Length: 189
Image (cartoon, rainbow, N blue to C red; front, side, top):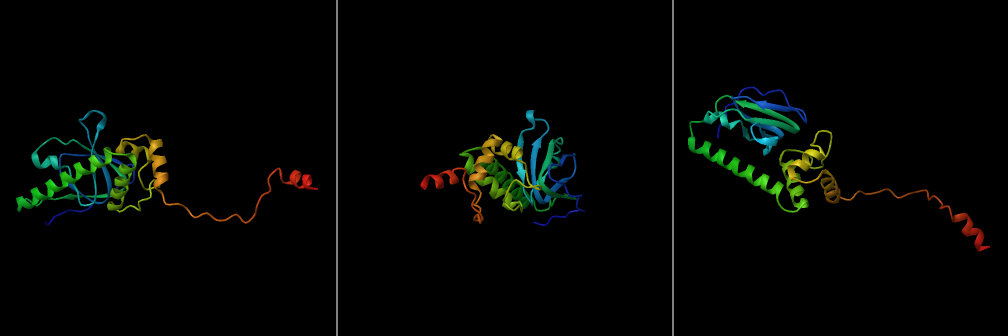
């Protein structure tokens, strides 16, 4: 489906928050965004936006702007000058599939064992173009991940540590004697 776009906005840094106005529709070019509702209590997470997703769709239906976005990693948005309305069927298909994926992603992030939820989270990060090794300076914080997977930050930390591949450790070249080494040698005489 052709997408006529205008210039890209300045990149969003990790943790940057923005409120989308009544116009235009935006397309996420790169990164990962947490999309929340301004009108819902507690600013509940609506969905996660991945590259290619359209945001601020309310403006297509003349609904009030109700979208707050938070960059979970460095992200780039591009305004769509005019969504391609000429092929209505393709537009509806695109939006329906996007909504279904958002719902499936949030369901997978919120239900099941924490290991399974974090496995889905890591898959989303790789789809967003991340290295898949959170947390990092450019990635989401443990608190943000815990909010998304509906678990305590301590639990997220523990499970991520178990999911991390084992590290190869260097053998010690110098053995430090224990405090009992000398008395045990003396006792042998």
